[in-house]
Image 1: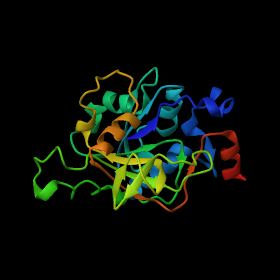
Image 2 (image 1 turned 180 degrees about the vertical axis):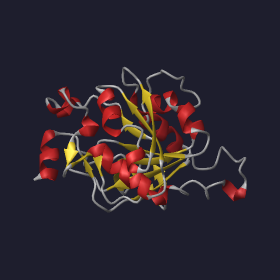
Image 3 (image 1 turned 60 degrees about the vertical axis):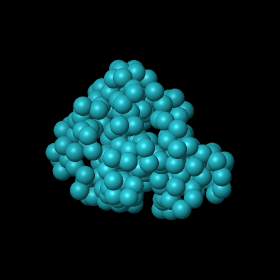
Length: 228
């Protein structure tokens, strides 16, 4: 799933007439970098949620066939936040763990193939029924950028915690088990961070650090820097 429903307030006036995921970085829309990287990794069934100017995203990418993908859209009208967007799209995502990425990050060399089995080997003692112990999410973290110097999570031996050192910033790329979102009704607005923190407190979120190129394209200045 690619999250593409944000309004992009900090990107105005650029996003007044163009949805943030279609802003171009080095000659290619932000969201297209992800589509191509997902397909390259063998992940060709893609769900994209959208709200603000979402019709432009559908017109730009179509059904994905020209990129070797099969794209389904989850239109929200009013953005439902990340977890709410997942809940709304549950009928499109199926029952297995899925990879999700924020459309507004630039991470051109990330290999999504590493997400394919991120949660497959995390059933406790080989017991698939140990749902209260197994990891429900796997996150990729990055070195803290200047705009988030304190980071979001701590990482200790591939286990993500809310407190501790060293601290890193969530990249916007993760793999999730659908049951994480069972309590959210379709159409309900809900943020992802509180859910991740709840499961991290239980020791059920794993992760690792991505050390390749990564930029949160959150402001016109960062976009201009990438394109300079």
